[in-house]
Length: 231
Ligand code: C5P
Image (cartoon, rainbow, N blue to C red; front, side):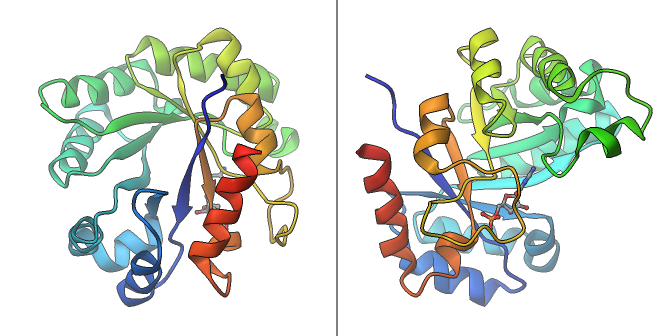
């Protein structure tokens, strides 16, 4: 039987209070939470501790991209904060990826380490304007290979790319934003799939923000998505 995807709720708020009000409404057994650059820059490690006190597991989505030693130190700092998942840009290259993986090797309980392939906000035109010659799908495949060969656990990619990733690396943990239930607003997302479609294509973790965070009853919205995944 196909394994069901889990849901990561994106806490895209500008204050710890707002994030915690939402976190208190969500069942930690039924979702994971994502803290990104703006919330973390405002609220820092104390917010992560408060979320952990509520029983939540956190994906620290800071997409590190720097020289290998700096990324290794950052990944270790994230592990010391007991986050459940952390990520780096795969385009930082093999040495950086290997340094990140090595940095976590000594941990008894380490976070999942995930590589970001190509941002889904990139289209072929903006991507080629950077001087890359491969097509976007080829670049996603290439960066996935670098990520997995360096010993990371998986990749962030578009739900439209998940099947290709899983075909080549079935063991890769796949994390996909760009997911919208049919009943929710598309917001500013463009290339979207429903949770069920993303799950069927092999996405292990669905990153979903506003359909849950702006719902009148966030836990009810979460449960509705979980039910749809099980149908
Ligand atoms: O509200 P929504 O479901 O669109 O939130 C999606 C989350 O996933 C946001 O935190 C957004 O920054 C993140 N994300 C994304 N597309 C990417 C990478 C991350 O939407 N390619």
